[in-house]
Amino acid sequence: MTEQPALQLLKGHTVHQRSEPFTHRFKYDLALIDLDIDKLDAADRQSVVFNVDGTGLFSFNRRDHGARQDAPLRPWAEQNFQNAGIELEGGTIRLITFPRHAFYKFAPISLWLGHGPDGTLRGILYEVNNTFGESHTYVAATPDAPAHKHDTDKVFHVSPFFDISGTYEFTLKRTAEHLSLIVATRKNGQQSHVATISARAEPATTAAFVKLALARPLSSIGVTVAIHWQALKLWLKGAKYHSKPKQSSVRTTIATPRSAARKTAPKMETTA
Image 1: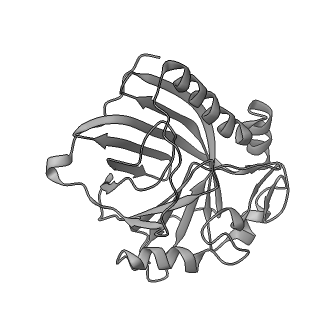
Image 2: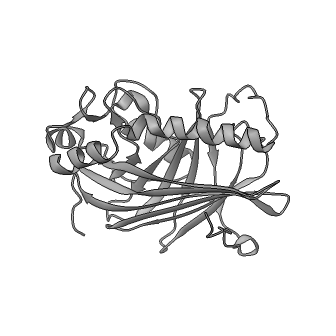
């Protein structure tokens, strides 16, 4: 297996589509970073405009993830994997997330990919954040397959225009060149929302980061701006507002493999 660099750049887009009580769809470009959490020093040296645990044009800060501490990330990740019966035996853990751009970062979702010593993907942590400063982690084992499919109850408040009910259906494909993620929300047997990420990997060079900054100068804060802009549009369309409930003290939920009866492909309209 070819060893991956400590840091990669992923560029692509995200699409969100609401199906009820009306259709609402939007698409935005995005940029992600993919790091080996045990090689942050090497990632720090990869580009003069990328910094780990500091400030720069782009950066990554350990306090934005996991236990939110200036400490190694592996113990937190391994504990969450172990709670779901997933043993990595020292294998690589890679974290795919939104980079901090200048002074700001908000990551609606981050993916922790836990591998065995042979490089096989054994588990995923979906670290989900909302704009109220809260987070929740969904954990899933990943038997060897081209696409990893699993379900979990929705237990975390993400949007004020959806209540905390229904199930998430995750579908993840990750190759050396491409990332594909589908998160479908199903309620009362019907799909109510689907969000996708599609991105291609490229070397995390200084030239690539500078090009990204010039093309999308507000790429990080733009994520939060886009969330609130779409929320305003939903409100104007008449979407029901749900007040944020108190977050549960349980911060991890274990997902299960998709059952044969639930292998329904997420529906995504192609019109803008």
